Image 1 (spheres, one colour):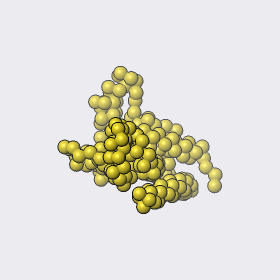
Image 2 (cartoon, rainbow, N blue to C red; image 1 turned 30 degrees about the horizontal axis):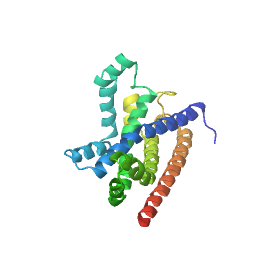
Image 3 (cartoon, one colour; image 1 turned 120 degrees about the horizontal axis):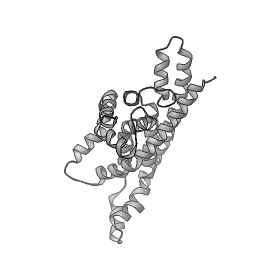
Image 4 (spheres, rainbow, N blue to C red; image 1 turned 120 degrees about the vertical axis):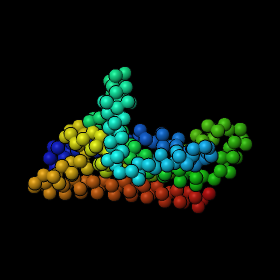
Length: 230
């Protein structure tokens, strides 16, 4: 199976975008998951709804919202360009933003479930020994939630890797710049004789996704075993 230079570029760019999106999302996802799992506050249901909104909205809607907000004429996009020279629309960095937003709910959910599986009595015991809330989080909650954090990061990576609707709406399908595996497959389906390229990229997508899902399943089993041990 021989890949063209454009296909190799699309594969490498997809891996780069998915990896950066997962890594950038992870700290925010940990913080939001902790709030939802361990804090009771006004607006908690609203926050939970906002976090999961990308899962139920059509991806094109999310992409258009990103375009109108972070595009060069958008409120945030124009400010970023004027003060920092940062342009997100029609750039690979914009693809990272779109992929991160679409993957964020899955990452938060996996981490939240893992944190909720941590026995609050263990955290309370650490507090009674004089640990501050931050130390309890760093030394108890975070280590015990590590399998869920890993599972969430892997799921987020897999979701970001396959993101299409929001990405193509926000950053288009520019070869070498924003053309990911998904958008390259779409381009092949619109091109006569593109069946071979479609199948090559589909096989690569399936292999990468299966590896990610298997790793996520291993992390989930680790969570289950830990819960039984506790």
